[in-house]
Image 1: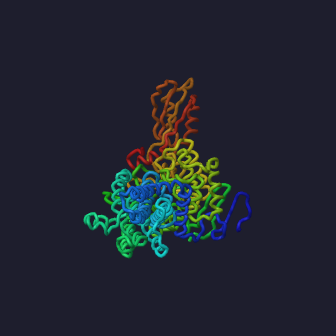
Image 2: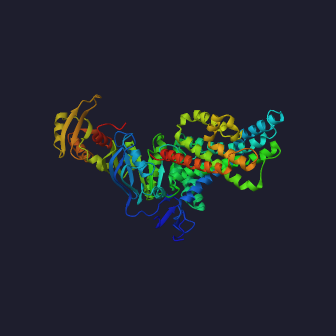
Image 3: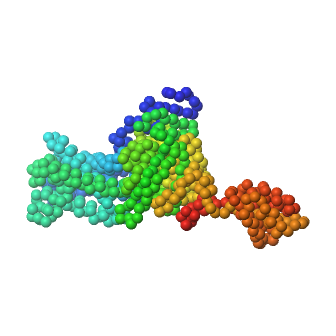
Length: 281
Length: 345
């Protein structure tokens, strides 16, 4: 300590610890992590609410389509194996999307909350990346909890240890894809249009993403197959199907990874452009 | 950069940021901003400098370019041309570095509504790399200093506008900025909250923090600022201390006097005697609607205040009594009207 112990006065040189004031070698990475820590803190505090929020829809889909319809004989016995990987994909993508889109709309317009982060010492683009990373974490958690729920409702889920790592990677990719789509929605859609946009985007996204049916089986319905091929979620659903239930017809797994990753790069580029446009003028 | 000694006084929570090379806190050279699709420049080549430790006021009507200037200085708006340097850091070239050394108190509440008051301060310091122990210590000191220590765990939504304002200032001080930007800080505040704010700005100045403040309030600009820049249509019209700006005015300095007549003498001879004082240009006798005495308007050279005593003497010598004097001196508002040709509000 350099200064004498004056009462009520703390003096410190930068570089010695503990210093009052920022440390000299604080990098943008650490600022990004501090912002991520804030998001994790806020979500962690409301974790049960978060879980209820993300689980409910896939849970009902799983229960009605996987359990009720098969028990009543309206769906074939193997349908739940087709459905389960698709619902994991749906949980990852949708939760990722909702975790960026809505907060961004609110923070850029009503609450201005994002300003404190835009004024933190890190590049503006890094704030967007943090949003996507955090949203992807939420998406991943939502997708991961589908497994115990699946075991609970269906009795078992088609998990294979040999493809476990690839499944996890694809779940991460799916969550990031959703978060990147949310980044685009959250930065391009004006606040007063967000409700109608959600209605117009989410429903087609949910039902054209091959979560309830395998893509190759759509060759009877060519136009719909083409539409489904445009949905990034299709490659997550199909990829998970290929890894978890390889005997069900599916798009080649490598193709799912390649197309999914390409989509991620493109969507992120568009989303980052939108974010920069909103953050800087 | 950002080496050099740094001192934070907790008892008073005054904060001095990293050493600034030279004595300039802000350097702006020929700053130009044209927004996409806008027909004219929002900033048309503005240049000024702010000394370290100075309170610098930006005065101008809405849309004059104040917020654009502050936006550029705080890295949220990209300049079309020119150069802006804050605490030695070029804001366009190194925005991340600039954000380390500046603090911003925006016009609108942008507090983190998911966090408590104290957490708002602590997390902000975390983003800026203030070590954990220091964060908590500083947060407590600043909450105390800004009169927020009684409800540190409340959510920002439950506080009044004045308290929100104080929270945002306290938050901005958490990372010991070299330059603090306050954008229209007293807009929407009640008089008590406004006075509290003024007091705090004076304290910050006393502690050596450079403060750049935008306002469209003449009193605020005159009371708080060491120097005032008057800006309109994206151009800097004047820049000086409030006193010198006022002194440079060509407008009239007058004394409006009310005199209770004595037993002898008349108004005309008193007016003549007053006109004989050195520095007095014209003496007009005004109507006195109350009918209780004589009223004169005396036009003088230079400032009006030094004429009060001689006028009183002349009146007393004439056997009358001076009962009221009003000094008519131009204020910042008159300066503004003369420069821009219109009133501020």
